Image 1: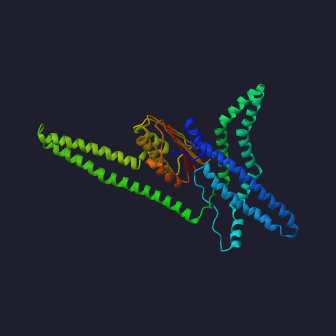
Image 2: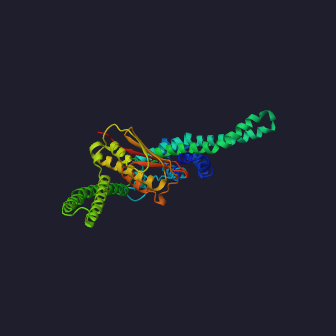
Image 3: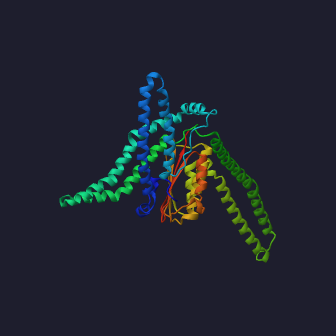
Length: 407
């Protein structure tokens, strides 16, 4: 799968990373960060100075309010620039104004928590982040230039060697800071609970209801198969057994009856396997860990399960996580060509962290029907997130984080 963030790109093989666009995207991110930061400093300083000088006649309130609202523009630009090194979408958390006109717009913005969070980010960016961008660029490219100029003096050749090393490492230096800066930006500017638009919240709620209805329908189908089709197969087996009592041994009809019993046994086993997959009893009786281990024991690819949880998850969440893991394992069997896989899971600070790895050929792409889109949809309904590292040639790592609480 194509990396979604700068840090994911760095996890690729060195040749894949160095020949990709990510080092250049990271360079553009930091270079534009210097420009945006310098412009923000100029606007903030001008607004603060004008506001403080005019505050004595109360006119200075307008420039100070302008400084606060200008942080909205800085945040908008930052969300746009973030696409260079973080492809995960970040919705705009601002709600529509409560009325028409500039006054209603200004009143809405000044009463939103996100506006003040954006102001805090703009101040941090103006005071420190763009300086750090400039420092990283100067170290990665300015320092090598200075050391190369020192070649005129043959006694300083070790510094030139150091400059070459710094220049060769610059793709990793620039990309690593770009990834860290992007993570900090997302922490400040990503929407919080309650800041998403009403329509977007309804879409998320409808997706949760849809998955819940699928789960309920799956339970109903499992119950109907168990109480209906499976019982009829058992009755049919008994009828065939009674028929055998009336048929002489060695007759052609006896051979046909034996073949029919074998087909019936195979169908019964397949139906039992289907029912177990729809609503495994081990999940309800013994929990997620036992259910995953049971499924892995019957999986065509050898799977090592290292899943440790402090207790039982809520039933609905437990079911969803189980089928999420099943779907990921199915993707491995169908698409990866792997010879082995591993499921690792731990619970940290109200977050269930899962890592599913395989030694297959990699190159997982959602557009190729790898099933990653279905995983992403299920995780969205669970308010979780996922990262995929799947360079061509493998291995593939699926990292999943799901917020949850144990009883």
